Amino acid sequence: MYLTETQEQVREMARTFADEVIRPMAEELDREERFPAALYDEMAKLGLFGIGVPEALGGPGFDTLTYALVMEELSRGYASVADQCGLVELISTLLVRHGTENQKAMLPEILGMRAKVAYCITEPEAGTDVSGIRTTAERDGDGWRLNGGKIWIHNAPVADYGFVLARTDKDAGNRGMSIFIVDLHADGVEKGPKEHKMGQRASQVGALNFTDVRLSADALLGAEGRGFHMMMCVLDKGRVGIASLAVGIAQAGLEAALDYAGTRKQFGKAISDFQGVQWLLADMAKDIEAARLLVHSAASKIDSGADATKACSIAKCFAGDMAVQRTADAVQVFGGSGYIRGFEVERLYRDAKITQIYEGTNQIQRMIIARELLKKGARA
Amino acid sequence: MKILVPVKRVVDYNVKIRVKADGSGVELANVKMSMNPFDEISVEEALRLKEAGKAEEVVVVSIGPAKAEETLRTALAMGADRAVLVETDDAVEPLAVAKILKGVAEAEQPGLVIVGKQAIDDDSNQTGQMLSALLGWAQATFASKVEIGNGSAQVTREVDGGLQTIDVKLPAVVTTDLRLNEPRYASLPNIMKAKKKPLDKKTPSDFGVDTAPRLKVLKTEEPSGRKAGVKVKSVAELVEKLKTEAGVL
Image 1 (cartoon, rainbow over the protein chains, first blue to last red):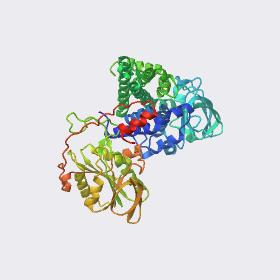
Image 2: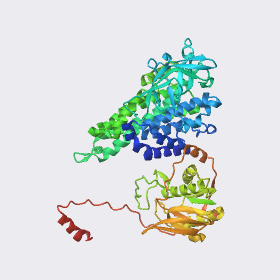
Image 3: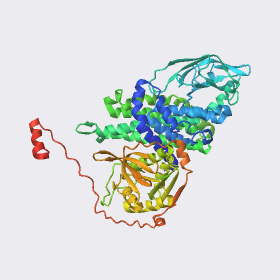
Image 4: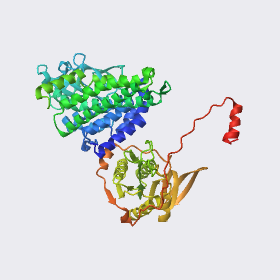
C-alpha cells in the first residue's frame, strides 16, 4: 500500500470514530435536520477540523492525501458531518494562506468549533458564474460598507463569521472581487430561514442579507481585488474533499448492500447467491475503488506541488457521478426496503445527489477537463 | 511516579478468525491486527492517572515483531510519553513475556504496571500474575476501578460474586477488566506528535530471556457449529424435553 504508517493510523482513527459515533446517529440527524453541535465539539477535540492547518497555528498539519482519507471515512459515517469538516478546511486554508496575524488568531476558535463559519459566494444571479455577484463592499472611512445578499449558504443559520465574496470594483471583472470576514451578529446582517433539502439534511443552509454592514479595515482578507483568485486557488483542495465525500457515501452503500444481500432470502437462498445481485455488488466495488484511486492521485498531485487542476476535476466529476449511480444500485439491492425512510441506503441516495452539484457542477468539471486537454494536450 | 503499560499486537476483534489448514494455529497472513482491547483500557487508565496528577510518565512496552511498532505508535498517539519495543519474531509465551517485562520493570522502575487481564488471541490470563510473582510485587487483578493513595492503591476487582475492593502496596501490578474505562480516540494532533516520541528497540536477549516455547500446541480447531433448534408444540412437550433431553429439570 502507498499510504504511510501515519496516514493509515489517521484513517483507522477516523474510520473507528465514524463507525462508533457518527454512523449510528446519521438517521436521526437526517430526520430531524439537526445541527450536531455536541458531535462537532467532540470532533474538534480530536483535531478533525482544520486537518491541513500547520502545527504552529494550532492544527495537526497533515497533507491533502490525509485530508482525503479523513473526509472519506467521516462521510461513510454521514456526509453532512464530512461537509462541515470540508467547510472548515477551506476557510482555514484561506486564513493560513492570506490571513493577517490578527485574522489567523481566529484559527483556534474556528478549529475548536467555538466560532462557526460560512463561506458566502452564491447569489441568486451568481452560482456557477461567480463573476455575476452583486454584493458590494464600498470604502467607508478607513473601513468598508457591505450591501447585498447570499443564498444557499452552508452554516448560515448557525454561523458566527461569514467569509463573504463581494465586488469592490464594478469595472474590474474577476479582479474586482474581494473576500471579507464579516461578523454575522453585527447590525445590518439578516439571516434567512433554513432551507429544507433533499439530502445532507443535517447541514444547515440558508440565506444572508447585508444592509449597510460596517466593516473595519481588518475585515478584508488578503489583497483587495484578489478574492476571486484566492477562492479559485483553494478549489482544487475543495474538489478533492467533495470527491472523497462522494466515495465515502458510496462505500457506506456498498457495505450496507453487501450485508443485506447476504441475509435477505428469496427462492430459498440469500439474494447474494444470484448473479444479478452479484454484478450490482461487483460494479459498485470496482467504481468505488476507481474513484478512490483518482482522489488519492489528485490529492498526491496537490501535495507534490504539481498542477492538479485537471486531476481534481476528474476525481470530483467521476466520484460524484459514481456515488449517485452506485447508491442507486444499493437501493436496488434492498428492493422495496431501500425506498423506505429509515433504511440507510435511502438516505445515501439522497445524500449523493448534491455531490454532482456543489463545489462546481459536474458539467463545469467537464468544461475544465476539456479546457485543460485542449490547452495542454492529452498527456499533460 | 512512572507507569509501565505492556501492550500486545493481536488480531483485530472484528476479524473473523480462520484456523490454518494444518491446524497449527490461526491464520495471521493478511489479517488486520490492532492493540489488544484490554491493553487499550490499560493505556487509558495510565493516561487518566497522569492527567489527574498521580503519575508523571507513561511508558508503553510491546514484545513482538517489528510491526508491533504500529501498536506502540497507537499508544503514543493516545498520549503515552515513550515506548520500548522488545523485538522478536517468535511466539512468546506468557512466562517469557513476564520475564522480559520483569527486566523492563527493573530498568524503568515504575511505581505501577497496568496490563490487560488477558490478550484476546490466546486468552491466557497469566502474564500480569506471573509478572507480579517474579517481581515480588503486589497484584490486583480484574480491576474495574483504580485509586492511587499514598504509597498504595485501592483497586476494585470484578470477582464472581460481585465486586471486591482491596488495598495494595506500591509498586504493584494491576490487570484491567472491561468496565474500568472507555479508551479515548487518538486525536489527529497527537497522532502527528507521536511520530516524534522516543521509541527504544531491545531484544529478549538484552534481558537474558530465552523465549523458546515450554508449551506444545497439539492442535487448533474451529468450534463445532451450533446445531439447529427445534420447535415444540406445547408447554408440556417443552417441559418433557427439558427433563429428558436437556436434563435441566
